[in-house]
Image (cartoon, rainbow, N blue to C red; front, side):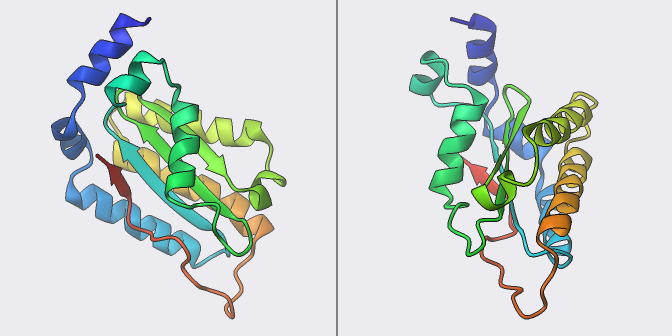
Length: 167
């Protein structure tokens, strides 16, 4: 049992999340996603959670495991072309996970998603949260643009662009 992690999760709450991601930052991230999706046929969702609940925390749930749960809960997998991508940030751990639906995951190597995650985490270490997320959105967009180019006939927004703040 990692007591430092447990303490971080108990000390990282909604106030910290609101301080790090004020309304203006969430709006900027939403606009970045919206702008991105005008250039490709993919769907991007950014979700942030301050900390894990007590039971998953004591069961040592990983950020990856939680991200997969969120991917399912938000129905990111429910896009017509299986090209939804979730960027999940667990704030207490400062860990980012990218979960891509099978349509895009089959085309982009896991190492490429990992590199985007590490770059975002590096920005977070420098307290550049908004910029880190927007740069992550832009990096994911490069892959979506390559494999799901924009089709003006099919520009449905299947996943809301507004960041999801999990409480």
